[in-house]
Length: 120
Image (tube, rainbow, N blue to C red; front, side, top):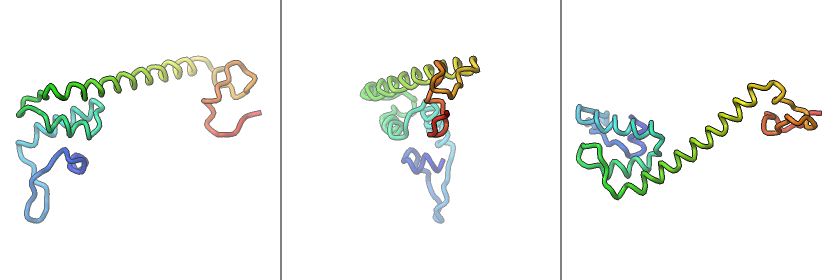
């Protein structure tokens, strides 16, 4: 909750002593923010979405379509990258020889070395 407040996604009421006060009306916005964060959207995008949300329906204004499509494209690119890495790691872990640290070995992969030193 504090993180959401720091990112200007929430502005809870405060007591005279500065303590945050949440009530029933804060439940839906917090849930919406949580779902948007879980979808991988950055907080600056979430702030734009919340600013344009239609009065509690959960829908967003059509002017946000380009922003959301851009975020979807970024997510698709990330998924493609993760799928590549998943495939590569699956391949490497299924073949013990794939972890060769001998540069003359055809299975040698310098990207797998954890230190900057080359093995002899």
